[in-house]
Every structure is written in C-alpha cells, then in structure tokens.
Length: 160
Image (cartoon, rainbow, N blue to C red; front, side, top):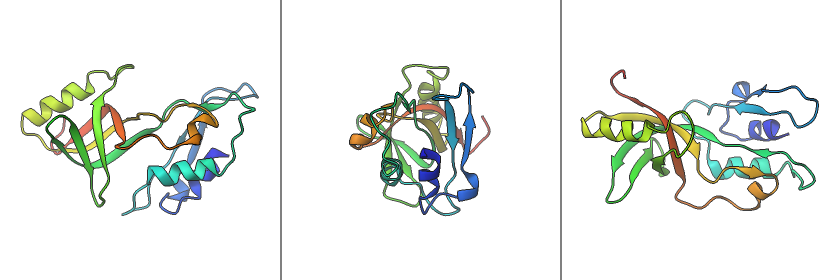
C-alpha cells in the first residue's frame, strides 16, 4: 500500500517506483521502496507523508518505517552553527548532521573536510531524521522542521 501511495504523488516518476522485498516470510516482510522524481521536479517530504498517511495504515499492525533515505541535489554551505544543504530549484533546505550509527558514520566529517578543501558538494545522501517507527505513530504528525539529514554519503564536482 505504501508503495502505491508514493506513486500517486504528482512529482514521482511512476515507472521508477520499485518495491524490493528483503525477506519472504509471508507476514510483515521487510523491504525497500525506491523512487525517483520526475525530471525537473522535487519529491516534497510533506506530500510523501500525506500520501502514505492516506493509506490509513492502522495501529493493529506491527509494521512500520525503518528509515527514509534521500539523495538531495543542491549547494552545501556552513552557517554559524549548522551545515546546510540548499536544494536546487526550490526554497527547501536540510540541516546536515553526523550519522550516529551504521556503516558511514564518518561521511559527515568527510563532507566537512571536502568543504574545507574548497570542493563543491553537489548532492548529499542520508537518512531523514524523525522518519522511523511503527505505523500509525510515524504518520500522526510531520517530523519537525528544519528537516535533518543524517549524512551517509555525498558527491562533489570532482570525482572522490
């Protein structure tokens, strides 16, 4: 149901939505939903939240959302107290933070080092903070703004 809800978003390339099941137990199988925005469009997280909410995932299940991973293109700069990604073609921005767990814990420090060397960051990948938990708790309210990306990777204008 969540996969179909994401395909209803106007800015999602319907042909790009893929559900990959990671386990085959016959019950609440773990899986990944991947999608891409239509060319020249953005997938707004508030609209994504609304579309998944519209599926009416009930509290009677033990299913949920492990994480929402995004790749956002834009310009990264260091503010007074935060590192910010300004998304290309919109007013949207993300606060970038260190990923406290997982394989790529050093990615944020590497990103900051690349900025210090004068490299231009063109995209950042990471988990959106606050997008995890059981349904419907995840859908009860939007995660707070500004949105935070726990950095797991990035791309620069020159090959890494």
